[in-house]
Amino acid sequence: MTTQLYNVAQAFGVKAPKGLSIEGFADTTHPHIPPATPYVFRQGLAGIIAFLRDPAGDAFLLTGPTGSGKTSLVCQVANRLNWPVQSVTCHGRMELSDLIGQFVLCEGSTRFVHGPLAVALREGHLLLLNEIDLMDPAELAGLNDVIEGHPLVIPQNGGEVIRPHPKFRVFATGNSAGAGDTTGLYQGVLRQNLAFLDRFRVLQVGYLEPEVELGVLERAVPSLPQAVGEKLIAVANEVRRLFMGEADAGAELTVTLSTRTLVRWARLALTFRGAPQPIRFALEQALTARADPEQREAIHRIAADVMGDLWSGGTPA
Image (cartoon, rainbow, N blue to C red; front, side, top):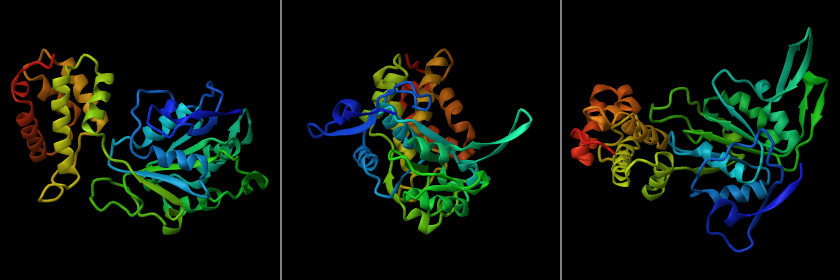
């Protein structure tokens, strides 16, 4: 694929040194380029750009709470650079062979079909391993050599050797930083192998700043009044504070209002604006119906304090 230089400030809409550029691809039609969505680039962009320019034998791990925008950050960077992505969601039963490839039966005969790792390595795509801390660490250790730039050897396919394309990069996301889940909130998270983790640069991704998140709400739900959006965000940030254990008593909530849940709440509030209590009804459907009764009541008290008359029956529009 033909490469192309992109001006960082223009491509990402951020302040950057004049003339700072990064190499991406010229083809805008590749089916594995993530679709564009409105996005405000923030923390960590500089680190990701530096990694894309020269990984130096590293992979890149984005870690943080659920719904903080880890995957979307990678995908929207890739979109602006027309960089194809092989995206995989990991799980406890996934094996290294699922990433490399395997023989499949096709029209009466078997043939080897390359997996996302092999394709990304050969074609110079980004390999994005979502929820990497759900995968067996013994299987992930098989990625050590390719991360460092060594060829991938596939014994099952007659000893095929795939040498890494210069543009091949490995990204991963996880709710933990590989040390396991100490909160009990993320079921299935496994402690990862230290030698594997030693090959990663790590970026902690938090929730959006209020003014940035308000912009996200305005683009996603343009008919929502700004004053209402500000109150929804205030509720979300107080819930997140309790979820993250920033209260004096430590973690008090096991559910949280991620940005995607916040957008869902706003949309449902407008959908149900004819109901007696649209804000409350929408919050229940968006989040609190899956919380235990005590936590549901605690979140509703926070919302009632912040929303005022809107909570007790006012209309959001």
